[in-house]
Amino acid sequence: MAPVLESANYDGPFMIARPQYDLHCHSTVSDGTLTPTALIHRAVERGVDVLALTDHDEIGGLPEATAAAADAGLTFVAGTELSVSWRDLTVHVVGLRIDPECPALLDGMRAIRSGRSRRGQLMGESLAAAGIAGAYEGALRFAANDELLSRTHFARFLVEAGHVRELREVFKRYLTPGKPGYVAHVWASLADAVGWIHAAGGQAVLAHPGRYKTDREGMDALLAEFKDCRGDAIEVLTSSHTEAQCREFVTHALRHGFLASCGSDFHGPGESWMDFGELPPLPASLTPVWRDWPASALLR
Ligand code: AMP
Ligand code: MN
Ligand code: MN
Ligand code: MN
Image (cartoon, rainbow, N blue to C red; front, side, top):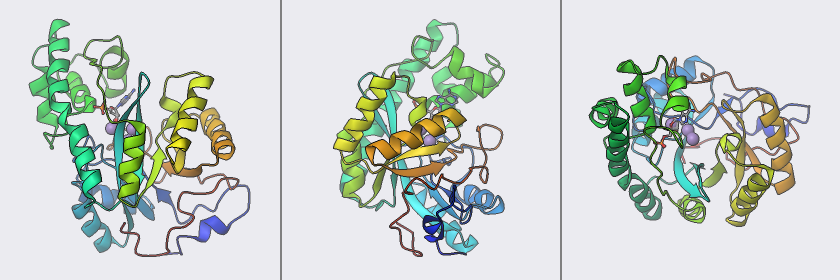
């Protein structure tokens, strides 16, 4: 494999495409459909060179993924994606190169996860009131990790039970603010999430910023507060950004002085907006989040 710093030294309009970094995806330990091992194999087959597993509020998949990546010759980055409440929004903060044994991070993630079961029950009650019975139990059947019951598991249940044709439609009709099945929830604070990631020696990355439903002023306030909390990077390239949003967040990264990250946010074949191997290279005007990473031994 080429040295991982190679792309950072390229000064053309785009960084060279290899090695290819994908720093955001999910396994069955959160709301993905592939086991950590199957995820690693798919990433390798599709040309990813450096992969981070970033399960929601969890690091339980990292040992298996680390072993599978070592066997497959893939450079692996230990990660997670923390759920955060900021103003009236839920935002996600990815942690990269974290120490998965850091007590502050483990305690923080446990605290975030602890609210999920009760929230799931309330989501089930809300759907029952809308005429959909058995959703809590139904969603649990899709969750390999019963501590990590997610809206995605409810979405899979709603499709299986025939209430919605396909997964992408579910969130438009259910599970989002104002719709049946949505239950407001308070997650971690932005400062705590960044602090736990830093306590674990990692870098904090604001995930898919284009997805947050806020105006220009709100986005600037979020980015400024993330910067004040010592957030390190923002995801510029992610499957849920339009081309215009990619350009917009290039500008934001440069203006606020953030490093730039990229990740598919892959959840499973047939379910995701983007598969492994489909991310374009980062524009060369940006400084990649991997700028100071060592060329080998990226296990943390
Ligand atoms: P939760 O953490 O339980 O609120 O679930 C959030 C997860 O739901 C995200 O990580 C996505 O995987 C999924 N999700 C949220 N909104 C959408 C959407 N509009 N389309 C598809 N998946 C979504
Ligand atoms: Mn998810
Ligand atoms: Mn996310
Ligand atoms: Mn994600």
